[in-house]
Amino acid sequence: MTFPDVAINLVKPKDPVEVRIVSTEIATAAPSPNFIRHITFDVSGTPLEGNIRAGQSVGILAPGTDANGKPHALRLYSVASPTGGEHGDGKIYSTTVKRVIDEHWETQELFTGVASNHFCSLKAGSTVRMTGPSGKRFLLPEHPEQYNYVFFATGTGVAPFRGMLLDLEALGMPTDTVLVFGCAYRSDFLYADLFGRIELGHPNFRYLKAVSREALRGDGSKPYVQTLIEDEAALLQPILRRENTLIYVCGLKGMEDGIYRMLDKHGIGGYFERGERGIKPTDRMLVETY
Ligand code: FAD
Ligand code: A2P
Image 1: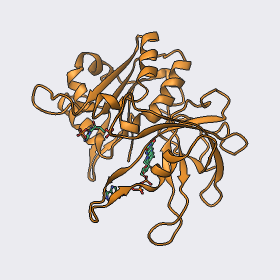
Image 2 (image 1 turned 120 degrees about the vertical axis):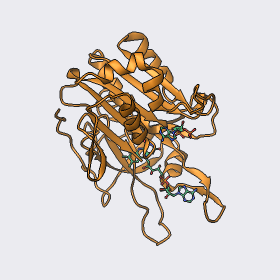
Image 3 (image 1 turned 45 degrees about the vertical axis):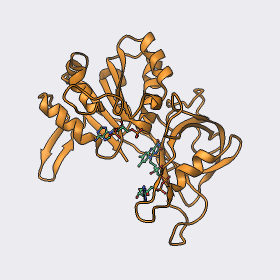
Image 4 (image 1 turned 60 degrees about the horizontal axis):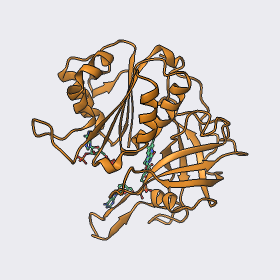
């Protein structure tokens, strides 16, 4: 499998571009304990214009300094748009941002992540400092019509798959493709209308959901994206067993481990190998977790 040549680091942190926010909307399907936004931004006139592929990320620089008095480090956000952007002309792209909010584990104060809260608080018309694009492997392959796809996403990990699925739809959804999306509550479905619409128009695309905190599985375990390999075995396993199927995983750090275990349990090979340093994915499994 080969990947297309892509541009990376056209805009570097030392010299970021100011990009205008075009729109910002709540992205969850219903009122939710999570604050997640679909944010679109305009890169026209910058080196990013026409140069971002589905699967790549952009960097955001929040204003201000960290605890050591240094400018805040860059944070990456996956582009949620197809390769030509939201309108095909390479100018407007989008991302899916979750506010990081928690109780501080030492001080007990409210902990708010720097860049995600800065980005989510920006209004349409304001600007954000951006770098990128970044990432040269978490992409659709050079000849996308030669592969089937199983995309596993938790939460905002669905962002790159929105873009890739729109790219595949533009090609007529040529092969069997499944999106397996995991979240805590049904309120947190992201882009469900879009994926439902693609599914209606293309019977070879299926959209599966694993909701972890509403009902347990028969054995008492939580529904997670990987448990659907078992619970939707008739749909997923024949696709996963084909030699020209690729798995993409995006979302929670470490989520790939559960997928390895479930593939192993069902004797589905080809996606990972065991080496001296533990398990590592083969080139048929692409992982981007954070
Ligand atoms: P920070 O200020 O960086 O705070 C987070 C850090 O604070 C954590 O790493 C942890 O060390 C610490 N921390 C966390 N909780 C607590 C607590 N309770 N008490 C004390 N300390 C704590 N995010 C998205 O929302 N959407 C995306 O599409 C997306 N894509 C990504 C793509 C890539 C390739 C990568 C690497 C990351 C991506 N992320 C995405 C994550 C994003 O880059 C940021 O890491 C995330 O938004 C948090 O940044 P922040 O500045 O808001 O939080
Ligand atoms: P839970 O937190 O109920 O254990 P979000 O990013 O919106 O929080 O969603 C993350 C989803 O991924 C939640 O449903 C969460 O379940 C689930 N999850 C947590 N740990 C894993 C894991 N190791 N593998 C797969 N999914 C996980």
